[in-house]
Image (cartoon, rainbow, N blue to C red):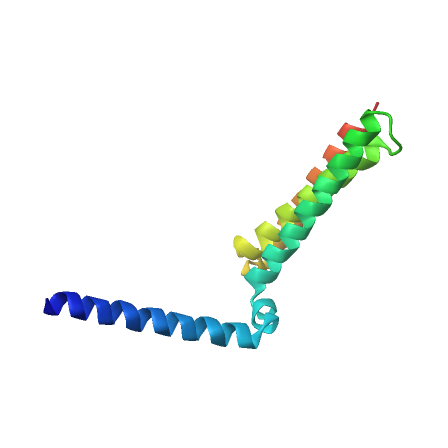
Length: 124
C-alpha cells in the first residue's frame, strides 16, 4: 500500500510541476518562441509549405483552363522547395557554423540546382 501512495504522490507532484511550467511558459508568450532559431526555422518552413501549396493549386487551376500560368506555378514550387532545402541545410544540418567554403558551396549548390530545375521545367 505504501508503494501505491508513494507512486500517487510522485505522479501528482510531477503533474503539478508540469502544469506550473506550462503556465509560466504561457505567461511569457510568443517572445520565447521567437528567441529559438529552430522555432523560427520551423515557422519559415511551414509558411514556405503553404506558399508552395498555393503555387501548386494555381498551377492545377491553370491546367484546367482557369487563369494563371503553369510555368509560373512550376517555378514558384521549385523556388519554394529550394528555399526550404536551404533553411534545413543552414539550420538543422548546422551549416551556419560550418567553414566558409562549405557554406558558400552549399549556397552555390542550392542556387545551381534551383536554376537548372527552373530552366528544364519551363522549356516547352
